Length: 310
Image (cartoon, rainbow, N blue to C red; front, side, top):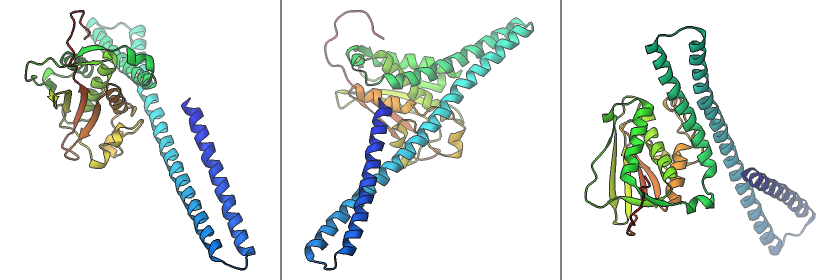
């Protein structure tokens, strides 16, 4: 569907370019034929020339955007290929080792742990790509339940600690002040994906040690605010909005070493907005860490007794 739309848009701008070029030729030829330059012809020429310039500018902007989009898509394909190929090759290597020669039980268990971690990494990449395609489906918007955000964040922290083999003090959820239960109405699977992506992003971009702090609070009486702060690489001011675009990855030598698909933060913002909230980023600058804030509407409706949803 998106490919068809993009081809249609490209066809429109190509047609516009051909039309404007023909118009420019006709104007030049007509201007040479006309010997007498009256005011009416001068005014008409200025109007048509303005239209021509505007069309050329729009066409140029579109072409530049298409080039950048294609570059991001190529980077995404390369990143996904690497994220899929690397764990598969690792799992295959350990399986071949187990099949070819006898291994001591301790070493065997170590191999199993590594293969399990690689399979989790592989599954996470596939889930990200699939989730990007699922966003926006209308039927998903109907399957909403009351979610305990505090429990959800604690669950995601435990998963991240296990996947990244981190100590418990690496990611800490600060105590929630007040007695109000922080619940929101949403899709548990999607919100879980958003929080996991934020935590994974904080861990990946902390190469010199993971020190992540998560803080939950009520903002302006009707909003739940989740702030995830790290002490990692930080961001420049001009990157704070771009990082939420599809396939976008921050350029730089240090960033190249950190693998990713460019979909994580795109999914976070889209999931947040589909739930009536938003996602933003802030950073004092390079080398001073970052803070990502996920905002969700607070569920103020009385909760009926029933099974837990998170």
